[in-house]
Length: 120
Length: 169
Image (cartoon, rainbow over all chains, first blue to last red; front, side, top):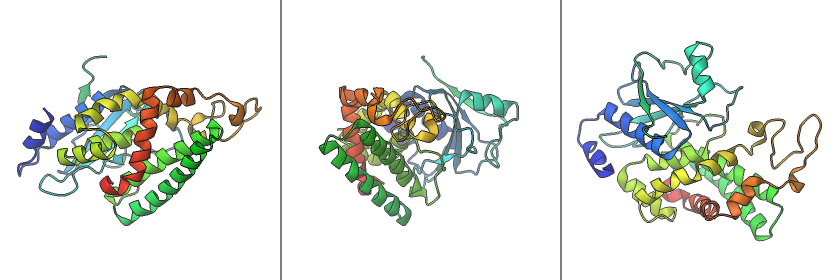
């Protein structure tokens, strides 16, 4: 399955939505703390995938601003792209919904695409 | 490895060498946990510098680090899995969920995340009226790291991840 996904991406056309789904699926599979992954394509550069991952196991850092991690995935070649992941707690997600907490600059919550855990 | 990564890895490797000395001499668990937490944090920082951009100031999660390795392209994943002692990338992926709990608890050892009332390997707590001291505390995470196959495997993977960093970072 993973090989097929890699093969799908080995052509000249970069399919951002497929890659976002793949990364979200991987992260939900490997980290039981992640409840939901939101893919935020709006405002993102063509070769950038933005994921917000709501995680119930991570420690909340009240004093830190929300900063995404650049995962440093495929940085070279025809499929080069950037994966940005923002880790937040469920309470931080609620604050974002109430506009009490801001997403990083230029990130937009418009038309988010959620990926949910299939089995809990 | 770029220049930023080289600097972070040098510090990580040095911290790791101290950890190995503490382990060899069977020093109190609090000291070994302190260095283990620092090593995993710096290892993550060293890795995420691969983009040339500074990673977030917050403690880089070890779990995020191994997930980022798992998100690399397939040839890279197989090579990384071999570096870390897994036969194939698939085995590395199936291992990640098994260390989730340990990885989060390891991260929470940092005093800034342990809070004023939580156990940490550096300072007596609670902060305002200390009643516990790391050197006399029995850390649950230590028992899980050293008393289970999963924990011991995690320690081995961390050792390999530091030593083999130039091959995959």
